[in-house]
Length: 315
Image (cartoon, rainbow, N blue to C red):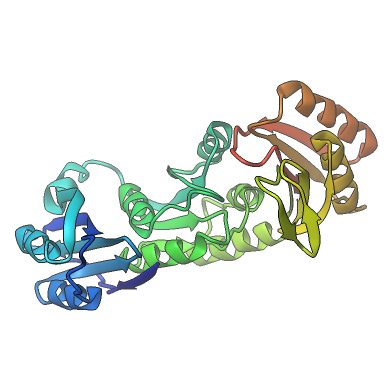
């Protein structure tokens, strides 16, 4: 998806207008860049995201009707949303504004709850197969009553959308480059309430880089990956995003992967089990790992994450 946007320090317009243009089958042949130029002529915080079949539009303006009328030239409209930001601001005026807040991208009920327990204010549903949009992340940033909001993408494919959302937030959003859920959790644990924004940025980024992430998943189809032919439903073991090996048993694969990842300096091991892995299998793995690495603190969390049977954190 090609995205263009305009950063503004603070919008002077009251109406936040969002919609999706579904391109006509016949196609009217208009260039989305002309729509962006038109919206900039009477609005700010303009985002025009052009995809094959649709265009996402975000604009702050005095005249939301003009946005709708012009967008109709490009196709039929859905998901139209108009908010009066001045009224929303007045409604939030009684809410205490804290110095720092947090937005995390995550999927799986247990993982989302864990992030909230760690202090995250808003969780955006998303992950490996369902990347949230720039607008989703921007909306979450704006919902947090804080002067600065740290965004934890927790996936390398979401970092760009997070950075675009931060650029549209008028300086409110700051992106931590967390590429996995364990990195995001480690970053939250490193947060220092009495430190400055910049000090926390350094501390949280540094903590996230100390984490190694293992993932046990499965092949959804026959494919070639890492120079190896893989059959459908075969168990895949990934170490920091790279294919380490394949197996026919998920628990055995998790134990073998941890053996490759753990070293003498390892102090913490966390096992998050998701869809396709049972509590009994997770407890068995927990028992085996605790016995094998007695110097490490081993924790287990029912993450409920899709796609990944186990997510393994080593630090």
